[in-house]
Image: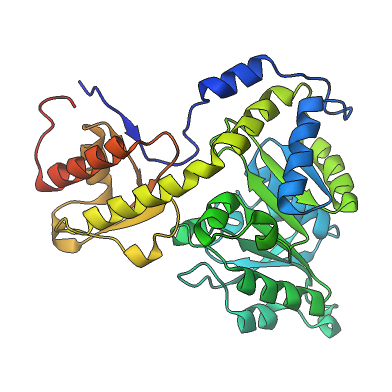
Length: 358
C-alpha cells in the first residue's frame, strides 16, 4: 500500500490551504451578476492594479477567460486571430474560438522558447486588399509563460516588439497569462511591465498560485464592459462568487513569493533526472515550474509504463505521448518530496519494485 503521494501532474491539483478555507468561510458576499459582491470587487481591483490595467473581471476558468478575450477583440464572425501552433488556446481549449465565435485561427510556428518569429507574425497578417476572400486579421495572441515549451518566459522586449507590430497594423494583442506570475518571478520583472503592451490578459488563479477556482481577465474599461456581457452569455455569471475570490486573494498574498521555490525544485529535479541513464531533460529550458522528460529508445520503458511504475511509489505525473513525460511543481511540493521523487525515478527506471509501500 502506498503511504506517500507526490502529485506532480499539474499545478492545478493543489488543495485549498487552511488560510484559504477560513477566508472562504468568512467571505463577505453578494450577487456578482448584479455587480454587488464585495470580495469579488476587491479581487478584481487588486488584479487590475497588479497588471496595470483599468479593470478586471473574474471568470470561472482560463479557457473561458481566453475565449471571452478573443471574442471581444474579434467581434465580427469571420475575423482571424494569429497565434502559436503550440499554444494552449489553439490546442487545449476545444476549438472554442472557432466553434462558438466563428473566429479563424491562423497559426505561426512556436519556437522552442515559446516565441513566434516577428517576420512570420507579420507575414501572417492578411492584406486588407484581399478582404473579399480572406478573413480579417484582428488579433495576435501570445502565451507567457509558454506551457508546451516547458514554461519558457517571454521577455518584455519580445512582447513589446509584438505589440508594436499589432499597433502598426491596427490589431489588438492578447496575452494568455495563465502562469504570468511564474514568468514574472523567473524574469525578475513586475507583472504590469510584462503585459504593458497587451490590450488584454487572462491570468489563471488556480495554477501556480494555488487558488481552488478561477481566472481573471484584465483590460480597458470598455473591454471589461463587453467581456462582462459575454461572460453572462457563456454561462459564467455566478452569484456569491466572493467565496472563491476570498481564496484567490489569499493565494495572491501568500503564494506568489513561493514560486521561486517551485522553480528551484524543478531545476534540482531536472539536474538529477539527467544523471539517470535512459532519461534526458533539456535543463536550459527549465525556467519555471515545468519539466519535460524525454525517454530514450534504449531505456527499456515508455512514458505510459514509467508513469504507471512511478504511481506504485505514489508519484503522479502526466505522460505526453509515447516517450515524453511532464512534471509540474506547485507550492504544496516540499524539498523532501523532490528528493523522494528523484529516488523513485531512479528505482522505477532500474525496474525495482516498490516493496515497502513508501
